[in-house]
Length: 286
Image (cartoon, rainbow, N blue to C red; front, top):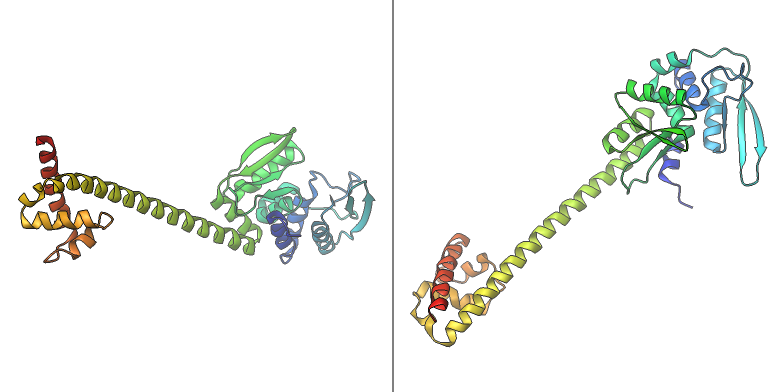
């Protein structure tokens, strides 16, 4: 089964090397969804069902010497893990965020983040468990130079981005470099496809105009040729009229190559304008 892009991003983030202790604490706070010390509140530091996120939380808690203990709860259709720590006092959550915003945001995204598939319009979001937690996510993103949109879903604050450039920037700051390359590659492919489509559409429209114009010229010249009036033209215009009648699909360049002597596209265009004026006069005088 193919992983979603969100899961690929989280898998990469969960495997990033652990940093210094302040960075570990910041990421752990981001994972926790807590505002106060979970030990004092008799709450787990990390709770969830995604094994790669739980493993990341376990490594972080070991690194900061919280001596993690794993508990498992079985529900009807899922299994939920929780990580409990000891009484080591954590640093202030807001100070951790201000000092290490990228690490804090990595933890929050691992636990509550989502990013759309790379071949779809960009949607990057983190769902906050509370309004106060939403303010912290906003502060972390602001600290990194990105201002998110804010909305609510079933009363839950959602902080999101629709801009590909800013989403790529945040993923890079959090450490998902391979995922960023995949997204940027998709952007390049999409831009090239759009450019090719524009060129093809433009070329098709140009060809249609050329063919329509040539067919109109050919129809008018056929009517005058039947009455022998094309013989009154100058040799240069009569030669071009014959070529236009025989080859209505030819471009100006091809017409110019087959005149004697060959002439440029500009000269063909000039002669065709003269020929069309003459055709219009002759048809009006019939």
